[in-house]
Length: 456
Ligand code: BES
Ligand code: MN
Ligand code: MN
Image 1 (cartoon, rainbow, N blue to C red):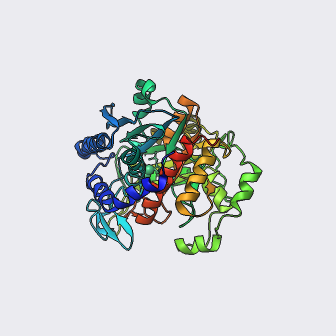
Image 2 (cartoon, rainbow, N blue to C red):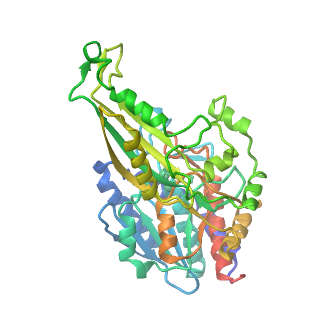
Image 3 (cartoon, helix red, strand yellow):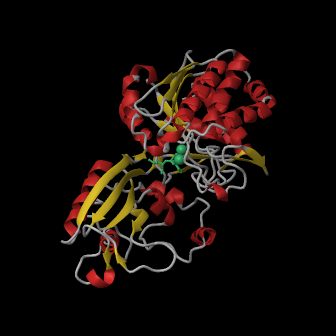
């Protein structure tokens, strides 16, 4: 086995260059939600293809029915590892709340500020740099790696599953590795063994055939705004339980030892509340971490109806609209949950309005055992990279393709996140801790060594 210190020294020498290179990728406005930026998504994919080819991979752009993905092979001996990440980013708005322009990366106080720095360009680049160090120092890759980097994760990966099916032979692997999650706290290397799924829907209520004078018609005509509010609040009872019939049917219990481990994580409800500026949390029988990681949710993401301008206007609006999402836990199925929600909405809709529901997107939840040897190898590698013991957590966010890849390949997924919870993913001033970026590169390099040296 070659000397890993020499390999890492090689990567340390190149630290400024690694950051400069990452900044090139961060300057590309690859916003997947906005069709105006479709060319930029192609540009980001092409940039990755060039970069991975330079490192010594065989990389190519694979077009899909949406934004393209990138597939790159290292070739070589050893275990087959599929690294999955995404180059697409969330829209930057509200742009006026950024301290520096979102697509002009800038380092301040050891943090790299830019849209996509932590989610997920910076994190995926960690693995490219770790493998580059190996290849430059030894001439080859210690494991057989394939990169799958997609451009539609932030919009629910609508076309990727089909595209992956098309390239199945190219993507076969013994384990999947993802870096698109967070560390539980600074200095605490973290593996994530659960993610929530998602069902996202839009509800439209149509009342009378036009907006009405509320004095001339109010009291006789059913009000769509009020109706929608009633229908939404009917989805949860006063104890915080979601009331959609059948909603909890497939919710799997958290293993007792896992729940027990969570009580040892450094977390306080008081600090959590204070950090958010709220004086109470939602009522629940479960701990806060369990509510975030292992319980499903019902959230109204947006509401629109009637007059919302300056001053007042006496109107009975003709329509009302809400965007609703439900985070799901194993073994809830997004389609079945969307069916249950639709059925409940039609059951409780009063006469006098019509309700129409549009399914926006969905993703399956994912959770896994923490015992697989490949996870033990990852835990050791993170310990070496960060100099502290690795903790296991779950997270409340969703990465729809993870469950799909597990179904397709039936292999374990290693989720090593290098982000931090306060790095403003999806928000203004998104940033990535530069120290975590470099410790991440070292950890990834150690991980490939652990896998190659066949310790388990
Ligand atoms: N990287 C996140 C998922 C994530 C966030 C995992 C926080 C763990 C902690 C991912 O890019 C994301 O934002 N996913 C979306 C998925 C949705 C658009 C289908 C999410 O969770 O809202
Ligand atoms: Mn992400
Ligand atoms: Mn995201």
